Length: 338
Ligand code: GDP
Image (cartoon, rainbow, N blue to C red):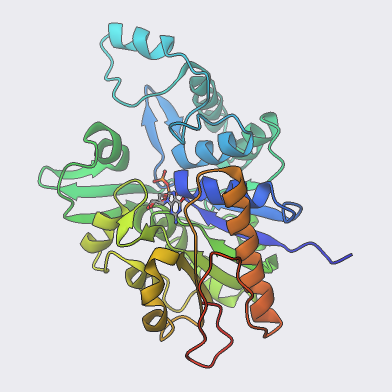
């Protein structure tokens, strides 16, 4: 039997968790791990909330509220209602069961337990087998500059429903952050590193910007493939298209290739963007256009397996045999899966 592939996913919340589910429930689950974003973390009611890590945990535990794509299923909101009565600001929805996660996390943080260890303990208690690795144990936080000044990411995202015009971004604490040994080891030992179709600016860039992280990725011999979160110039959900423009990139698959320029060996885009394939081939060695919309377990797994096929085809220098819905070309003469 072939040795299982060591696959590492760099992931944000909702889009990343869909990709994580695809791998975790595929034939490639055995040596699959996820490095999740922690720059959307924020304190609420004195508790440390880590939305992307919780989305990954709840998804892989099959406890996610599938309608929302975040939070636990079958939630109630008595704690939040009570906090409201007490005069608390309750715009950030936190369900009763979800509150337990944040209480547990905050208590352990106060005891000095490493955030990585806390995330691992929470995942274990939910029965999640896939290692969910934090890229840093340092506190890093996305901030958004609006006409009213710098605001916290969740304030922009949830409280103001992404409505304020964004003038700039920053990640507080990023220069002082240190990468966790677990994330560096995962990257060094990987055969295949996948950048999820997550928000490149506020989910993936915070991971890549941790000092030493991009260098670790560059020196890893793993094959690196990104999946575009933008389809036809738009996000499936959320403000990534708008954020790409503010950050100085095109808000389309060419912009996504630009963000990951020099880092990736392959880019997988949606078949709706197949016209961009030849232009992309100038900057990315392997480009594949296929269905990237993930709305059920089956197509999440299918996309995960397609990424593995891209890797295997590149390694064996063979032309990629796409699934029925994919579109191919090899106009640069390279072994391109397109
Ligand atoms: P967040 O941290 O909860 O915002 O989640 P992520 O950063 O992981 O993912 C947000 C991105 O996922 C958005 O830019 C979406 O366009 C993208 N996304 C969500 N679902 C899909 C999907 O099914 N296919 C693709 N290609 N992108 C998706």
